Amino acid sequence: MSSLKELSICKVATVTGVDMKTAGKTVLYTIPVGKTFIPVMVVIRNPSASLAGGTDYDIGTGANADTWVQANDLSAMTTLTTDTKIIQTGGTKYSYCASSSEFGIKVITGSTAACTAVIDVFGYLF
Image (cartoon, rainbow, N blue to C red; front, side, top):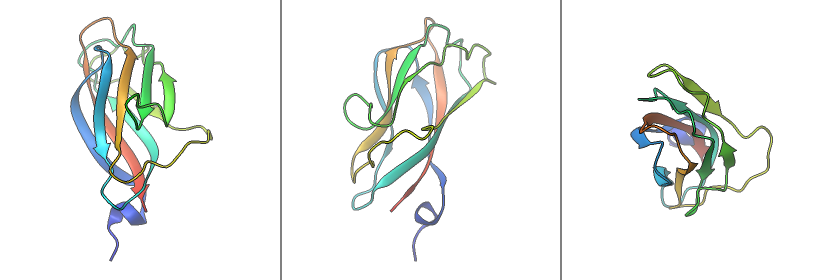
């Protein structure tokens, strides 16, 4: 029988303590061997500090995490522990996330203050 991750859109990962200031990629979900992943939504929540200044975050696979949704501006997330941003594709065409690839977020222009956040990844496998 197929797993719930193949039969529904569900939360496939929650990553806590994601550095939202320092440039670089954080892996959020590694696609299982033999499966393909369709991301549907990413929820960024509970910032530990203001994300003011955080104007460019890319989300996806590859070294630059730039295959899904790019140039996400999170600078309006200034209320600690309660702000939430839901990121979806908005109808844009993108490629599948291949078997064994690493879906993540890359800080391009991060927050001014040191800040971490919790990130939830939703989608399905086939």
